[in-house]
Image (tube, rainbow over the protein chains, first blue to last red):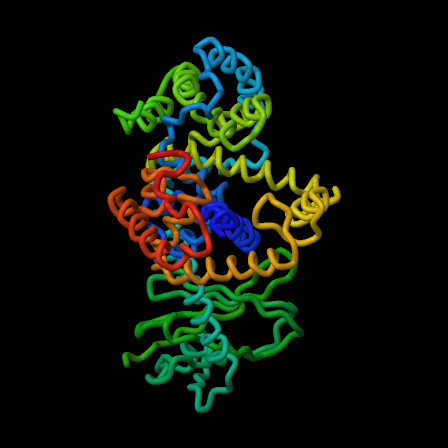
Length: 266
Length: 213
């Protein structure tokens, strides 16, 4: 009977041969490295051990890793001489040089940004001034819009002062000068003439008590014996004033009358 | 080389700051070409292909040396490059061979059996009749049950020792246990298997394997 019994080792190898067909995929080289370093999770470690038992290739690779870089040549193969290693170095050098001169196709070169020059203090001051002016202009426009709206609106109970020429005042025996009453921001002067002038356009000068010209305005239109003058009170603070009325005939300017008046203090 | 474990990392650091990096790379090549070449040779590749792959390994090293940060040993990094190159080569070779007719080991065994005048599976080299076939199947099952009855680590040690002809030191390295533990596992396995398998197998003393210690 003993003569018919096979050796145990031979039968174990045969079982191993069959099991090898189901040994699964080889682990990655990185997994072998991690297993040897002891950094593989325990479940993966167990699976890898089972694989190593069946897979001669992976077992061999792991054993080589363990003895790397002191690997010996396989049995029966002579060790490389220094000359053979030097020859291998000579063989690789042309390829290394070619690789060094090849542009890296996938290399990403970051864009180099030029440093932005820091603006001078003058620019900041200019910008601040412009911003200030812009705000001021906006405020002014808003304010003027208000004024325009105010002026465009109808006024109720505006003071009306009927002025007579100074010559008429003298003739009347020094009657009192016309007086603008207090109150309100405007008043209307009515300039009367005794006779209808021949000119077709007219000018009026507003003068203060010292004879300084404060304002000049022109009126066009047909001949007439009365004019109205809408006066802002801020132009005429309390005091004495006079209006000189001229008739314009081409380049000729003829004084028609003057109208003294008094603005009362508020 | 083994005495100075950081030699590789120091060489790389030197390469990274050197005014003449080519000279430093030559030193790296001269220091590590042999193990890389032996690695491919040891995987069963012919000498010429091993030379080509070793050269390709160093080209990749040269290309990636800027990125090596020294978080691992240079030797381990180098091994990974060589290992992945080997795996890729095997993969592309197996793709090329995919269209070739495949012959399974069973076919070879059966053809061998036919040549020997037997149609059944064989457990030994001698011709086997129907009774032998039944006996062989029974033996295989008894062996499988006996091996499954061993503790997992012990079973692994037995398989590595017998099936892969590994030395105690190599089994210890693969299983990450001590050599003493390997010896103890194999001794106990032999005792247990002797009791269970003496009637079915000869030469149960597998401890003195073919590769010795």
